[in-house]
Structures are given as structure tokens and as C-alpha cells.
Length: 185
Image 1 (tube, rainbow, N blue to C red):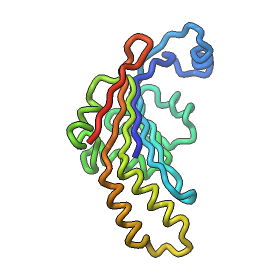
Image 2 (cartoon, one colour):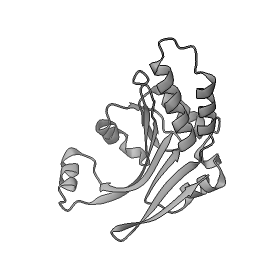
Image 3 (cartoon, rainbow, N blue to C red):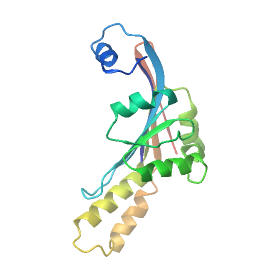
Image 4 (cartoon, one colour):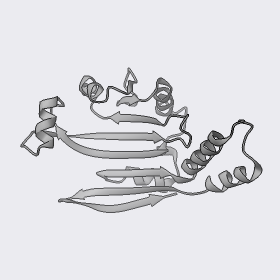
């Protein structure tokens, strides 16, 4: 999976006129919001990628839902956040994570969990081993006419890929620049 978290200063009102003024660089009252994006890419065109948007301001459900109308709202907040995903199934998986019934980044290796807990303005996390393993597995099966499973050498490659570390890049806004940082498992 790929995870991005960010602190964004956006117009206090999320209507079309305020967003247009903001992106034109016109003076607009802003408000800081925390967002997260979780992406599960796939290596086969027949298997759609999964994406979820996690939004910190619960009172903005209607406005955010209108901006991201192609995503399915979770209904009730998940861990006190609005969640919009490509499917109800992904919303449910995120709900299970919130309830402690599925793994969470907070339970990851200490350097990874700690990396996301450090002060940040923007962070990107890649579970590199699992990501490459899933993409190669999907791509191999997508190319096969018969889905009987990959041969031993592909399974060995997937095993080796799964051992790659979790990588995180982090930036903290300082003036007009991002002070870089990073973490890994």
C-alpha cells in the first residue's frame, strides 16, 4: 500500500467560488485540515486499484462528498474522521483497522510508527515489499490464460520482494520550504 498524509491550508469554505479564488492566488481565509490517502495499486488492468480519502473535519461531509463524488462515503465517521473510498469493502477494512481488528500503521515497526508520529506537513509511506509483491503477482496472473497459480520461481521472487523494507519520506514546512526527513523498517 501507499499512504500519504498531509496538513493542508485550504479555503475555510469549500464551495466552488472560494476554491476558485484560492487557486487563482486571491486572498482567501484558510483553515488547516489533515488528510490521508491510502492507495492499493494493482498490477493487472482487470483488477481496479483501491483508494481511500481520509478527512479530518467531520462537519465538512457534504462539501467533501461533492468534491470527491466518485468515492463512496463510509457513512458514519471512522476513528473520528470522514472516509470516502472506491468501495464499501475498503471502507469496511478501514473501519476494522480503526476498531483494532486489522493491522494499523500504529502497530508497525517502531521506526515506521514513530515516523508517522513525528511533526510533519507531508509524509509518503510505501510498504515497498508488499507493494512490489502484489503488483508482480497481479501482473503474472493477469498475463496467464489459465489462473492455476504462479510457478516456483515467481513464488520465490515474491518471497524475496516481501522482505523489502517499509520506506517513508517526511517533510515539515519551515517558511517556504519543506525540511526533509525519512524513516524505514
